Image 1 (tube, rainbow, N blue to C red):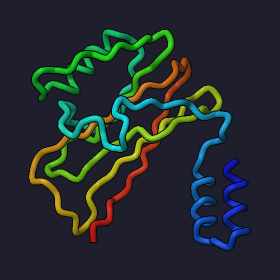
Image 2 (cartoon, one colour; image 1 turned 30 degrees about the vertical axis):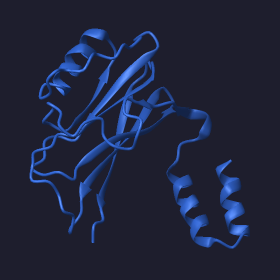
Image 3 (cartoon, rainbow, N blue to C red; image 1 turned 60 degrees about the vertical axis):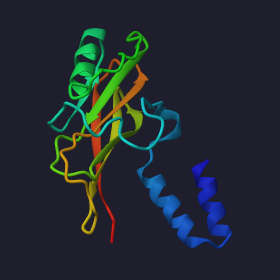
Length: 168
């Protein structure tokens, strides 16, 4: 499917679009191995920029006790704490990615996509930092993103994609 789009762009004379599509294809996972990632926040922003998780890291949650504890930790700076989303751990695994505490705004994190490689599930986490020239809030931030994916018995590996946002 993607190859058809790239070749269509080449035939229509739009080489820049074709080059961009080919670049994406080189980084993409095979279509039949994709894993559905359902983020708790429906837009492109992190779930929250003010979590109680101050260290950078990724968390895989496979049971309700760990989920309740991590939910409380994510929301430890918020009052009231939002209700705990229900999760059927027979069918779903929860993934949490934390950017760690930063001294300014402009930092974000997003669980982007996932696929299977053999028995492992690969999850790509997109981390964004403010580039030179960016105007940022003078406040501590601790961005976190949360997503659901179908239960996977094998190992889960994270790949971090870091990008500095251009503000010039």
